[in-house]
Image 1 (tube, one colour):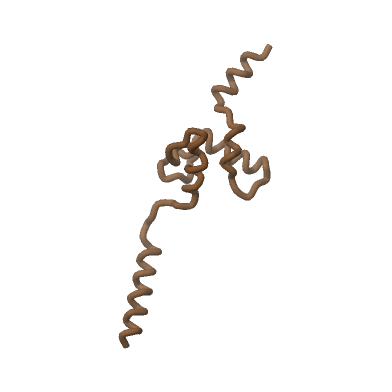
Image 2 (tube, one colour):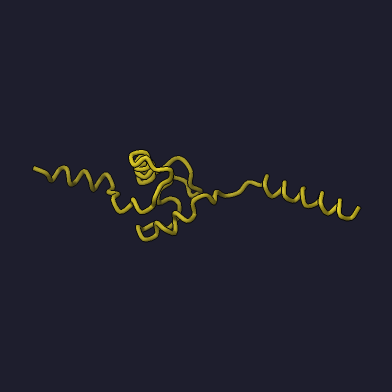
Length: 96
């Protein structure tokens, strides 16, 4: 009887923990890897602090790179190739 109550309590606790709203923890390693590129938090690539959609310019670029490279997941190291649009526009205007 005591074992059954303990089991039921465990199941209820598990359901409550799973059902609780929680912050997205899918990509926190991305922030750690992106720190060398200047990231301080998820807003480095996302509009919202929690991540997810919508993406800012950098996030859109990474998403497009993923498709262009036909990759399964985004690789933060691709940021070595990222140039903000304002920087790209300057270079194009400087060309003769």
